[in-house]
Length: 169
Image (cartoon, rainbow, N blue to C red; front, side):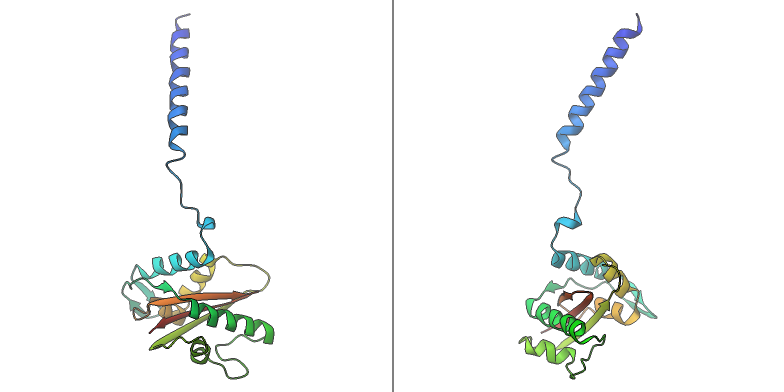
């Protein structure tokens, strides 16, 4: 009989804790990457990568400033991804001779400098995080991502081909 008041107080304490925790639920929300647009995911991933110094192959890059999304670069990237899919090739220069410069200029992006990363997957659909990880594991692609001169970027995906473009006007 002596334990009944202790058990009752324990139940009351648990009840109060549950009320407190449920009231916090709406105020504390983890960041849900799936609720972000693909564009935001790529920007976040690239800018997070650029925010820390990194070794790309044998070359060390200091932290670089953020890049912003550019719609003209996105159109040029999408064009290249679709062209690679339609014409069954995987290269920076198309069979017709179109290179990153010509694709970007065709979108009226007058640049001082550009760089391009490409990626293809067969049999699975990688996430933006997996694609950025693959590019950062490649010395030349990593160097493009970490280049502090670039101020803008975009990614264009078509089927199982991705093209990432960086630019400086």
